Each structure stands twice: as C-alpha cells, then as structure tokens.
Length: 133
Image: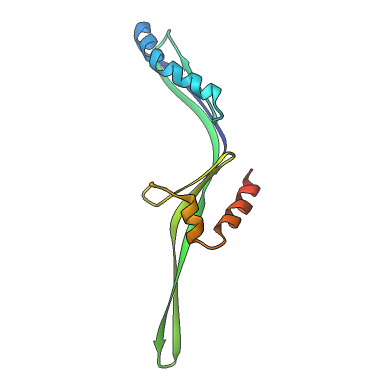
C-alpha cells in the first residue's frame, strides 16, 4: 500500500467553549507536529462557536500484496499430478520516504527479512515503487 495523496481536515468543537479550549490544549500540539513534519496533509481546527465533529478527506492508497505460491506433486501410475495454490503472505506499504511490511494479522514484519526470504523481491518492490511515485 502506498499513500500517494492524503488530505484530512478535522473540525472539533464541544458544547462549552471552555471544554473546547481544554481539548485544543491537548490536540493543538499534535496539529502543530503534523504541520511541521513531512506527513500527508492533516489539518486540525478548533471551533469555539458550535458543538461539531467534522472530518473531510480524500486520498489514494495502493496495496502491494506479496503472494506465496505452493506447488506440490503427487505421483500416480500415469505420471505426476502437480497441484498449485497461492496465498497472500504479506502486504508491503511504500510511501515516498519509507518502506515497511505487515503480516496478515497486522503485525509489522522486517522488510529486510522478507526480501531475504523471497528471491528478487527487493528488485520487484523497487520497480513497483518507481511506477507509483
């Protein structure tokens, strides 16, 4: 999955402006961190005039599944039967500045180990990533 475009806008307001101020005291620094780091465009805005929780966003996400192909053979009198199946082994997430992988339970995998376990995966990921961005 590669995030090419992600724009999010949050507007937060509680029924009491003082409560909104307390909430903003916690969330405001997070908003400032998003503004100063390279992350997708995330904007958080307080509203002291109305009780509101509003989210607006758009984005484009790509998923790169890593599939494992299993082939087995069964010898019979007439020859050999070959059986094949495939299953998703991992998902690779590629952003302009990072590359990481998840297993099917959502746990982070080592990309280095995954590229060692799967022949030619590193070159394939580079090729796919160069087409995405």
